[in-house]
Every structure is written in structure tokens, then in C-alpha cells.
Image 1 (cartoon, rainbow, N blue to C red):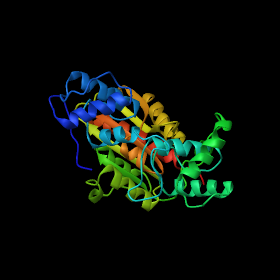
Image 2 (image 1 turned 90 degrees about the horizontal axis):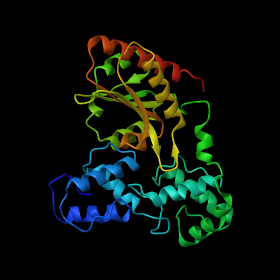
Image 3 (image 1 turned 180 degrees about the horizontal axis):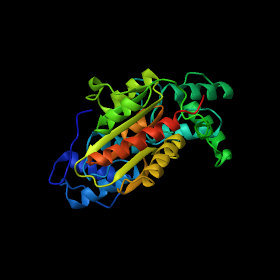
Image 4 (image 1 turned 45 degrees about the vertical axis):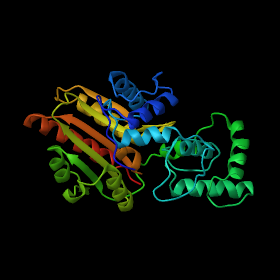
Length: 314
């Protein structure tokens, strides 16, 4: 996909397509104009809020990709394992239905990866139909036939995420970002790894590296000149969220609130690329420029919380 960047003042066919996609998804009653104006920016922000993305009111590659994904509905295309992985609301719907039936497709993230393939193949085997891990018309028909009766049954993926252990791996705790706090983390936390050569990677490429390395966790820390509050984010989207990520972010938020650090704090579930793509517990920390005393306090609290959280025995 060609890189996308749309903002107020832009115009042309791509803006018209943006309006059409937003209108189809229920965001506003815009016509088919070709001008990106204030109303367009507000609707883009509303869509970003609904998808757990950063609220910029502008369209970047991530926002455009999520707009495209939102347009897919179960049965609208053939779903199968390919590279790059297929992504969309139709995949998330498939994941939910499989998970309700006891077939574990992993986290409900709208990504058709190996676990979805395996779960779908298991479902096909149990139904006595062709086992190929592809959502064919026959498989879809069988899936739709059996899932209405399960109602709001708990997702098996949620049961797995409620397990006491916050991680399935003893690999390193990977750190990504730009912040003076990173030096403290790598100095104090055992097995904490910050590789300068990996920082230029996209969030998706960094996540792929973390997954291949079977990292125990990922912490992304970003210092912002414009931020005034400390924001902590964990994975949340579609019908599920990371309970381990929520525990970690909430625990850190409480610890920071009880420290001498006089900064407002927020904890929220989001679907930022680094949170979506990683398979392990991941947290994003966004903070304003801190004074040296504030850095000492924040660094000490973050290290203590991370050490305590990941000291849980397997």
C-alpha cells in the first residue's frame, strides 16, 4: 500500500474515498466532496477514538489501514493464512465465533495468523468437513449454523488471558522508544534489553522481532515536548483486551499516583500498532519532559513495578 497522509486543506479523489469510507462506517452524513475540512477532521478523530488510535484528526497509514479493515464483513472474502496476514473486522468476527465454541484463535485482534489457522482447522475437523484452515463457504455456513446458539458464552481466549502468569516466556523484556527513563530501566531491571539498532524499525517490524525472540514483555516509552500528563496504554480493541496488560498499566498508574510525582495520570486500552502486533504483555508509556528529580522518581517506580510484576513464577 502506498503511504497515506491526509490532513485539513487537502483535496482530491483520495479525500473523496475517505468521505465514502467514513460515511459507510456510520461516521457523519458527508457527501462525496473532495475537500478535507474541519468536519472531516472531527469525523476522522471520532473514528480513531472508536478504534483506540491516537486522536490526531489526520489520516496516516495506520488510520487508513484500520478504515479499510473496518469495511470487511464475515463472508465478504475468502480468509486463509497468507503473508502478509489478512486483517479486518471479518477476521475478528471469525475469532470471536471460534473462541465462543472453544477453539482458541489467540487474542481477538482481527489478524489471521497461525493460531487462527489452527483454530479454524480444529473446528473443521470437529465438524467433519475439509480440514484446510481456510474459511470456505462450507466452513462459514457451518460456523454460522452453530454459533447463534452459544449466545454470550465466555471466550476461550479470555480464559487463557486470565491465567496467573503474566507471560508465557522467560525471554528478555524489550524496551523501545526515546526517553531518558530507558537508561534507568536497562540498568536496574534484569534481562531488560534496549537495542539502538532496532529503534528505526516500524512498530510492526519491531513487534515481529519481539515475537520471534519470544520476549517476556515489551515496554515502549515516549517522551513528548507537548504532553503534560503521563499516559499508560495496554491492548484493547474489538470485544477483548489484554487483562495482563491492564493489570500492569493499572498497577503502574497506582504506584505513580502514590509517589511524590505531581503529574496527572491516565490509564487506557488502545489499539496502537505496537500493542496490536505483539503477542506478549505490552505497555506504552507516554510522558512529558521531566525534571531530573522527576526522572529519578518515575524511573524508580517503573523499575519496581516491572520487577514485581514479572517476578511471578511460571
